[in-house]
Amino acid sequence: MKAVLWAAGTILLAGAALLLWPIGPGPMVTTLRTARHQVTMTVDDPKRGANTFGLEIVDRTGEPATMTPVTIELVMPAMGHALPPVTAIGTGPGRYRVPDTDIPMAGQWEMTVSLAGTEKALFSLLLT
Amino acid sequence: MRALPAVVAVVFGIVLVGATPAFSDGATPGADVQVAQTLGDRDLTLIIRRAGRPPAPLRVDVVTHAGTPPGRLELRASTAGETVSTTKVDLGVTPGFYRGTLRVDRVGPWELAVDDGAQAATIPFVVPALVASPWENAVYGGFTAAGALLFVALGLAVFGRIGFALVSAGGVVAALATAITAGALAPAIPSPPAPGTHLDPTFDTVGHPYRRTSMTDFSRPPVNLTVGMDGADLRLRLTDGSSGRPVDDLLVHNDALIHLVVVSPSGGMRHLHPIRVAPGDYRARLNPSEPGAYAVAGELARRGGGVQLLRSSALVGAVASSPEHQGNARLEKSAGPDGAGRPPVELTKAVRPAGTPSTIMAAFGSPTLQPWLGMIGHMIVVGPVDDTQTPVTAPIWAHVHAMLPSSPGYPDRPDESVATFGPDIRFTYTFPSPGTYLAWVQAERDYSVITVPTVVDVPAAEGPRG
Image 1 (cartoon, rainbow over the protein chains, first blue to last red):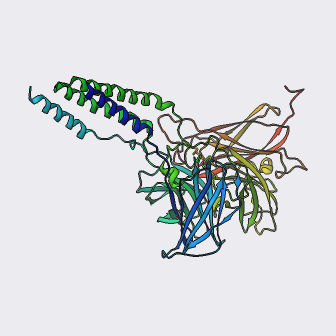
Image 2: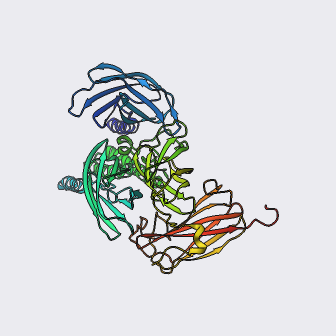
Image 3: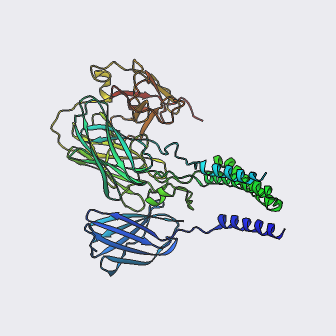
């Protein structure tokens, strides 16, 4: 009888685990091509509040491309909100970081990465 | 009797191995996208047929109309800034369907470029993911688990483990309850916001269509329109009314990104469908035939829904060619309806006082009309106009539709290859104020858009209203 209870308990636990297992969004990595470059944007768990973005820029041959300035412009198209552009900080060849950018509202945001004012890559972020 | 457990095991094995998992790929989701495009001197309809599970061929039909110059178009499918496939379509002299086949290799946001060598129209579209919904998975998973647990319970009972068999039987009941509940509730569960129509399409939103968001209102700010002339082309710039950024989220509504109606100073009407050359940057070949102020009105819908009417005007300087008066409402009484060689179109106007519905019936003679822009007919109404009020300043600007009859059993709307509609088209419109209105009735036959201009005099309502 004890074994039967154990079996029933195990099935119940397994069922609960299946239903309640946390499925959170992991780091988001997106790569886009512009006319002459390829931009990879990384953000850990995009959320409302402070977010840190990593950018990696390579040219069409795959070599890291360094340029100034690299800025990000955040816009929420559904509401028409636009945040002031932020200049990314260079952290290595072709690597940039935009630390602790406050995104005040959940929803879909549009992030334009402007490469030295000549090329633009448009990323989309879904903050739940 | 000893053989029984073996028999049970074999049957169980056959059921498990033989059962094919059910996926919802019997039908391809999404629908064909039909977009009218004024590409240079060509009036085209592009039909992007729904694609299967990528990698898959993408069929694109290019529909030409009477007067479309023959020539070669290049079609390109690209995603994330990378051109994935290219094909060429040779347009012949005969108006009709010309097909090109491209290839899509992943789900997500895509862009179709139609290049005539001088200009390239780019049309955004979505290749949807074929993903089973969570409730569908619950139904299939529940029934599969119930079946498996039933065999386990039988097996345990055969071996005399009645207690364990009862636990397993309890599992059968629980799994069945889950499956039946999910199945019964599924039709009532609202579908999640669709990438492309509600959300901006990204690889993430298209690939995970059942991810919920906290958003409930998807509407967007209004659009600002600036119009200018660029050679023979009208150049339209669309910017967001809140952020000032280019507007690049137009939905295909009534088979076009923008329905642009242009009325010339003498009252000639053109119904154009500007092409997207860059985000927020649209062009339409106008070939103006007379100088002066052209009234311009664009109908468009942004992602999230809601159609907007944007009115503006364009000033045209000296022009070389002489006026054509194509579709000229003011010349109707002297010149008669539309050009030669076509069957005459009879207009019957049942005009009621302002504020009550008036009906204008156009009799096209034979039931051979084709759907144009998803409708059997269109009527543009501009007015009231008088000696001081021109179409540029006219307070009323309307676009009346005559709907296609329903075709039961066919999920998609008929395209232009179906020429069985008409011959009589009725438009009902409530003229809001008395006065003289310019109106144009449009319908398609033999891949040629027929424009019938007319003038409607609307009397004032008698006595106090309400």
